[in-house]
Structure formats: C-alpha cells, structure tokens
Image (cartoon, rainbow, N blue to C red):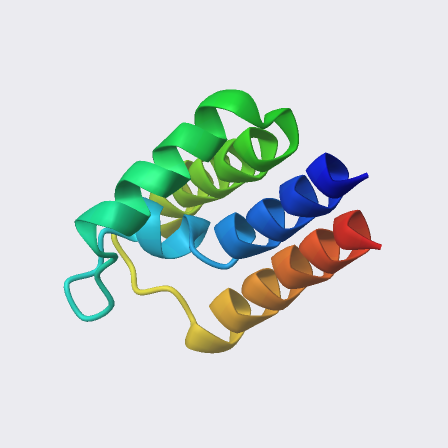
Length: 92
C-alpha cells in the first residue's frame, strides 16, 4: 500500500515536470537533481514514459505541421489543455 502511494506521488511529481524536461526551456530549468529523479522514474514507469512519448510525438507533429509559419498561440493552448485533461483522467 505504501509502495503504491509512493508510486502515485512520484507519477504526479513527474507528470508536472515532463514537459519542462523535454523542452529544456532555459526560462524554467529543472535542477540536476530533478532531472536525475525524473529520468530514473521514466526508466521504470510505463505510464509516465507513455506520457513523455506523447509529448515528443506532439512536438514532432507540431514541428512538421507548422510548415515554417508561426503556430497560433490559441491552438497551442487548446492542445496543452487537451493534454492536461488526458493527464488528469489518468490520475483519476
């Protein structure tokens, strides 16, 4: 039971950092300790690894889709909202 609770908390912690990890945004960097902790978790958690893969696929799709034109910020927010909904449903 404690192991399951710990896993849930770690998944929650990780889900909130996956996008920042993948973006490597200098405006919102993760600490080296956070990066190590997240990478260790992704190596063992199929669910969080699936979420990271979805973020990577979305990034690739948006890169191809943009075709050199700027992405409408409202569209990007809708996609982020959709991903947040998926993540929230997985937690329930």
